[in-house]
Length: 205
Image (cartoon, rainbow, N blue to C red; front, top):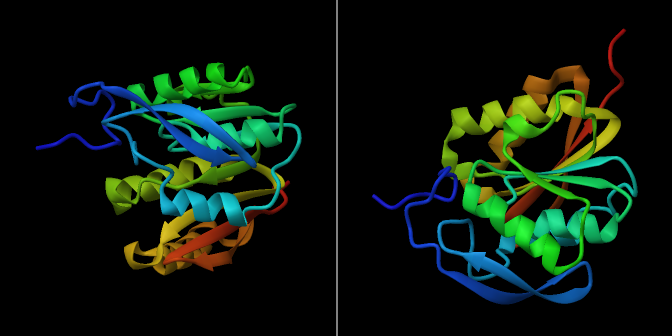
């Protein structure tokens, strides 16, 4: 059975290649490899997310959940050079690629880490994600329940999900699960994808 992009240590050959992608209004040459999500190009869902999400906060801690080779994290870092960007993935090859791509671009504000390496006291100013839907509903829900409550009051998460892979049911689940702690809306719909916006409410007490 082939390994998946959410495997910690992909068994597939680590054959590096460079591709040209447009991020933050710039054409960039970046490194990818097999065993990570969408290694040959910027995938359509991420394109939709990057086009439709608002400008990220200029400061604070920004999170790319399920970063792959880094297009979202790098975009956040390029658009918000004073912010600290956490590029989170379980895939060690993906994290290595993010580090190498940040170095290519002269970016020193990206922290490419596993989920456990984000300090517990980090409150997120924004979270952007093309989440790994194919990891399974239970694992996906667990990820979102872990990270979305870490948004600072008033901060926003933007999640892109394919419509035919359950975007609308995820919208309903998030609204029910988060309850009064957050507001969940659909902020965009394009090319078979939905972008869900989760806005954190005030903390109780």
